[in-house]
Image: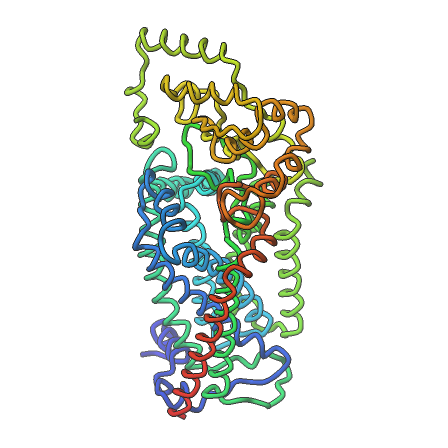
Length: 366
Length: 201
């Protein structure tokens, strides 16, 4: 193999990203050290995201026992579960709350990893698999939102699918047909109906979990192989052992978070946060109730779509996706201090648009 | 049973013939002659006071209101059911148990508590409905009185619908033993796992 050939360069790239000599218990666990500094709390965000994912899997499996993925029974089966199944309401609330917590933690994890420059060589694959995991998490949210088959679920899904289809008019040539084809594939019929529910259900409980499994394995193995990133520009040289010190702290945090989630799930029904007419069974012949909105984690996209021309938002989101995937190369030489500034600006945008999006919309479009 | 299986609905299946058109027109005319109304004043007040979307399902069986031919609407009622509707119209005084098929439990409870006459009087000032109902009735058992749910724009018949802060407090006091047990069990589990892992160190 010539040193300048593509094959050689690819093999070299992969061998430095997956160093086989480090693939042993000693290197990946026993000798692993975790840096200690002001941003050390950021090392726990990935674990918490994983905890919420495990809760999603466990509660989701239990929900499968009763949920019926048909338009005539989906809402009834959830109603039955909430009213008559022992701990049914608790399990469903845990599923709903932990889904929101998982997306929240995934976003925090991404922003912290960005601020800590955790994408730096040789951690590019960790970053890219993480970005893919974030997108899949959003896809989980979008597909899961439809499953209760209530007014907000079906109407919000219709809006989401239509917005995706509209992107076609801004694409050139044959590409302009792609969103339509993708939309028809997942919608399955002329409007959101039984075919859509069946396909979203398959995506939510089989296809997306399998994709997550593959990516999580890649992500976690890479993290263990390369260790935690240095995190700050000037490391303090103070470290703690991954096992048992960091590991036990992580488990302790998991226990605390699990108890908090349990208390919230048993005391505060997730449905209480939405107006009750939006949670009534979907009525294809009735009027659409006002206030149809996506879940809070899509507000960063929803409110700009409501306020700005479609092509502006499309352009911005496309640029964002490209930048996210190319981050390890775009920000290769940028200092962590500047990355922290960008992460803070992104956090401020997400917080403002999520918490005050409605008020801003009322100001812009009275 | 079109409403139970609306997803199998095919437009060709309900293409009306001349007879069914006549029957429908007749039914609509009959319904229009009946002195039965929905009272959107209360819905509008609840919506304005709470800032939340409220629909007819707060008091009626059908979320679209009592007028129409769908389940829970006047056009779908049998003569026996119409008789029950008429009983509500004459229940002028409080305390008369009514079971109108167009009203849900909360709607019937309002008529039973206030009587039709007092209820109609409140139409001009819907803000007084909550005070008139009092705090004794909590049909869904969520710890929030129905009258407060009316003011908050939440569903008085769904224990998962209510003011989130009040629901949290009520459920916390209701399930405090469960919570205590969960805390103890999780703490013991965490203690056990940590000690188990220490043996591998």
